Structure formats: structure tokens, C-alpha cells
Length: 214
Image (cartoon, rainbow, N blue to C red; front, side, top):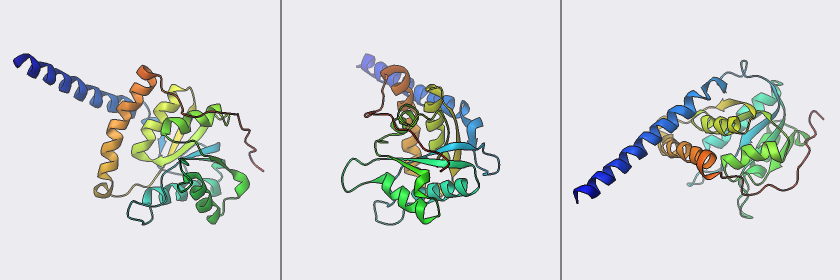
């Protein structure tokens, strides 16, 4: 029984050390590429907007979605991005993140010609890798919230991409606690995916050329 307790204690300790170490590594290695000021972020031809639902589980507007769209619109109208890849989940006929992002951006004055939809952005890893392998972009600005940007940038660095993040405003901590806790574990999972499991995108397919600046 004492041996079992020691083994369990060892497992818990190793897991805790790995979780803490993974988060420290991911944040410290990417924080220099995270921007909060539109004036400071380097311009890129292409911005990748990472998808999320436009509605909360209660049916109201999703602040994560709204703020990412506003940031993308500001980036376009300030001339810091010429074209957008809107990458998200479209796994059922009733759930289409890229289309909802497109409709919201068009309402803010971004022309459809400056938008490309990626329907296979089922995970952050998929969105990042597909932006390079399918859409031919290895120099991008990523639009998402700050806590999510570290993981997106870490994956980008692993795939030798020149990426920066323009972060969108976040909800108050009390309203985003569960998302932040989930992200804490997602960072560790991303390291396992990249360095241990060799996880790749679920779907790749044919390359698609982006027409930028028209």
C-alpha cells in the first residue's frame, strides 16, 4: 500500500512539474511576439483569425468572438493587414465559425475579396499548420486573446513560421476563469502533440493560393 502511495505521489509530482514547466516555457518563449498596441504590431500581408463561436452556450453574443472581429477590423483599416484567413470549426451543417466571422467582418467594412475561409481549423494546431501548408503563409499576424496567443505562437515557432500576435481584449477574469484554466492544460497538451505524439492537422488537402491586395 505504501508503494502505491509513493507511486501515486510521484505521478502527481511529475505531472505538476510538467504542467508548470510547460506553461513557463510556452509563455517566456513567445511573449516578445505578443502585441497589445495596434501602433506597435508589425504589419503583415495576412492575418489569421482563430475561430470561436459567435454565441455563448446561453445564446448571447460571445465576447471572445466580438473582440477578435473588432481587432481584425481595426488591423485592416489601419493598413496593418491586407487579407484574412478566418479559420474555425465547420464540423456540422449547423455550426460554421468561418462564415460567422466573415459576416461580422464584412459588416465592419472589410471586403469579401480580402477574406479567405478555412473550414478545417478544428484546433489551434490545425489552423496554424494549414495557414502555412494549404494557404502558403509563413509570415502572419495571429488574432486571438492574450492567454491563447502564447500557444498559437509556440506552434508557429515549431513550424518555423514568422508569426506575431495582435491580441484582442479579454473578458474580466471572473468571466473567463474556466477558459483560462482549460488553456493552462492545453499548453501542456500542445507540447506533447508537437514533441512526443507528432500530432498533425486532421485535414490538409489541396493548396489554395491567396490573392492579396485586390
